[in-house]
Length: 162
Image 1 (cartoon, rainbow, N blue to C red):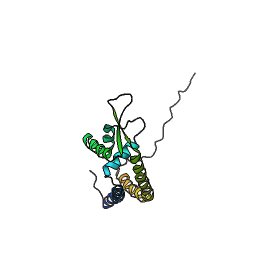
Image 2: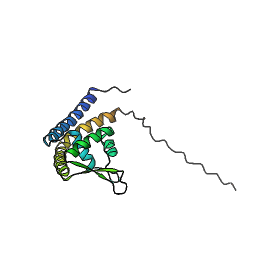
Image 3: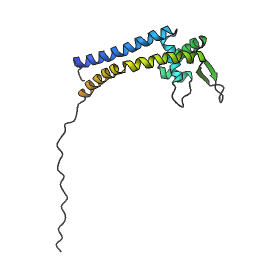
Image 4: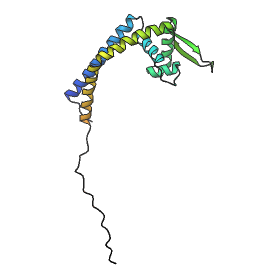
């Protein structure tokens, strides 16, 4: 097992610090909007669902890495606040899809814009700390010794004696 150097610890600590600064900004912005962190993340997950993936509770829970029942509770609170609604799918009435209400769209747009601006301004520092961390990782990867290229022997042609 590789031992970490002081520089490795410093790189990890700096990267975590940069992430924490962004998360602190995020938590404060979300709180000012009257939401909880999970509610913002759920609304963002619905709006940012990949092409071909339907916005159902199962998919939202998976994208957020939370339990199904936790996603249900978040949806219930967002629905009660008028941010999200459940809709029955047209093709299969058993399927319940999630969608943002106009209020949810408005709040999400504002919060996402603030987050995007914050990431744009913090990106150089965050990327620098990530590169420092990656350099430390790259240095620790054992490399196979590089040998000089060997000369290839040319096949001998048979002599024609005849």
